[in-house]
Image (cartoon, rainbow, N blue to C red; front, side):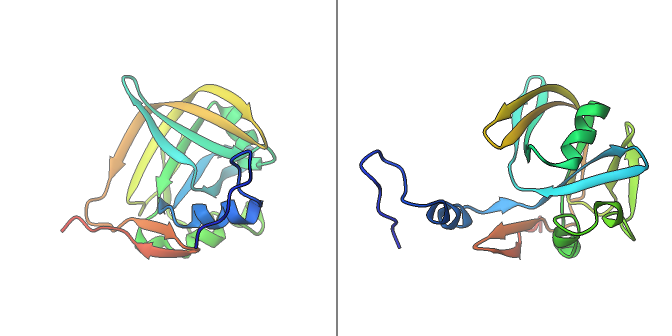
Length: 169
């Protein structure tokens, strides 16, 4: 289905845009940082590798995000690309009581930031810049640590559902 464009080139509704973006596969990530009383985190799909020189990442979080507040205070965060075996964490980190999101979730500190033990890929960053962008905030981080598990199949979000991504084998 093609959504008609208005004369100004924009789609007619936010729902049409949301539907169009559902057809753009993306890796499911959990953004984590250290909070006042322990680790905090939330799911995010607006995550990109920004630069190789210096190695850096860009994340986009809602301006109202409690995780964002802690990232700004800590000046650091981790990007955890979930593995297919972690698919239940998508909802756990997206909604519900933020104080319970790490319940029964194995993690370790890397450069002071919580990294999910079974993530397919994880990257720890220190905050370089923070920029308001409409109802979100863009955070650029310089990479201080990264790792991946070749044996873990990444989790991909496409057409409102999660799917196993390509495997390394």
